[in-house]
Length: 186
Image (cartoon, rainbow, N blue to C red; front, top):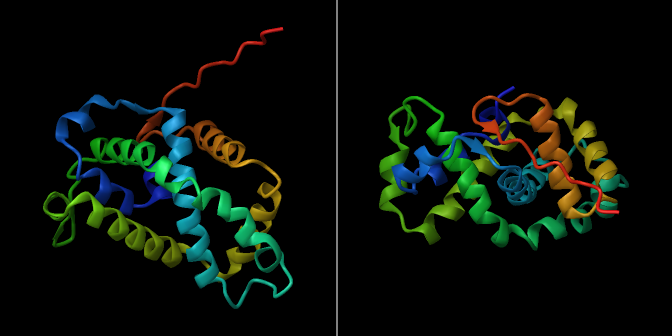
């Protein structure tokens, strides 16, 4: 599995707004930036799942009972997570050959022509559409179950756990930088 598959090409659009030099400097994605990317993307993915799975989610299931409360902690931190998410996107683009063009659409040119305040909502909308398009009705129950299992955890723990899962999945494009090992200070 590649991180680009997990986070979708919409992330690349935002990364293209940054300078080429900044992209080339990032050889791997630091775990903190990956965590920020997860915090940033989860509300978008949640909204996409609610739309795609509207008929499959149980009326008394977790999404109906506690989904909005669960995702509110991520929504509250999206703005602060944006810089780390942008750096992850830069690494995604830097690792792709021929990045910048999708079909007849020149993403690099589009991103350079838009001011940052215009680019972010465009990325959000594109990312949401792409995620919604990937959700199959048969996976809706699993999505709801995963959210319910994660819901007792604090936002940072969810982001860290999901980032760790991507790390042990041995993501190659881009790679994930090794995390610092925490030492016991007792």
